[in-house]
Image (cartoon, rainbow, N blue to C red; front, side, top):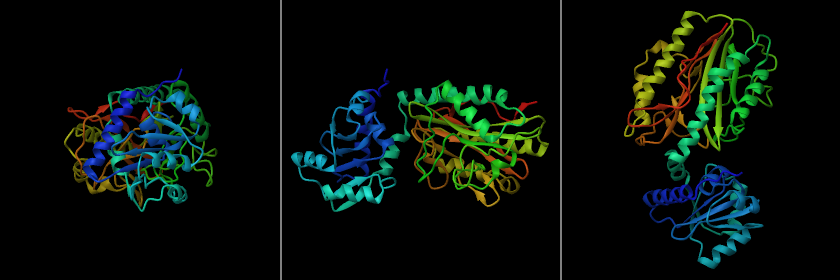
Length: 400
């Protein structure tokens, strides 16, 4: 049985988007959405097509493939078939003249698609609707929060309860990754980890033994991984085998019906880590808890970031949120239909938080010859501070 996004959800999302557009761009007349993630958000189905949103008329989802599946999956009120943009252009011309300026997802629409679209929709100017879409998506409804809580429940159970029994001497990072993926899916994970970062591939996340977790990577995060090969730096290395005394770093996503949580859990396999590494890890856990206490409506992400960073000493800041010169300038990020959503707990994000926003906090510190110690959990912004939905285990779980 297909679980459909409620019609009340779809209507409220469209209402909030139009309101945002009215505030930021009072003269807007039409917005067009192409990306499958945003199409799913506004229509409840993820098909090849485009959603045309006029300011004062009903929005229409024009579907190339599959129109039949869109009708099966979606409660959206206006879904029409199209073979090409010409069909949709004909529908627009019956309603009225296309405005000179069209608002698009400029972060994700490739130039070739833009050119094909403009051939049949000869507008003169394009403006971005990205910020408005992201702002609407950032505040989750109770329906969305219920899915996130379920993802968090699965995440907690698998990483805190099941992974310790999966670790065995001689297994490779790739072995653990594939076994972990299978268990997550069996427990209810929807099977994908989606990112908005341009041209980013991710199957599961970072699953690393020891120093692999500080290996250089193009991914914009504090941790790293060797991966399977230079052509596919995903999952984990086949050659790096687990041995006694290894630090194990698992930073993966989990999702339910499109909505993700993000969590990092660490383990000590066979023996304890040196005390200085344990101390650094515990400091990261304390940083997470302090930042979480500030996840309240009215405070800005930049204020949280600066409060935390200014409270850390110079020695700890070395290799904090990365290793060597490969450090990131954030403490956390919003999560939802994508793992790397906005706003980000970083400088420059000055708009106050709202209740119902969801963030992953991930304070971590690289340690030479050991790996990336630290933690990550997912929190809901509430009046009392961040509500953790992915578990409260501080990590460094002993597996002796």
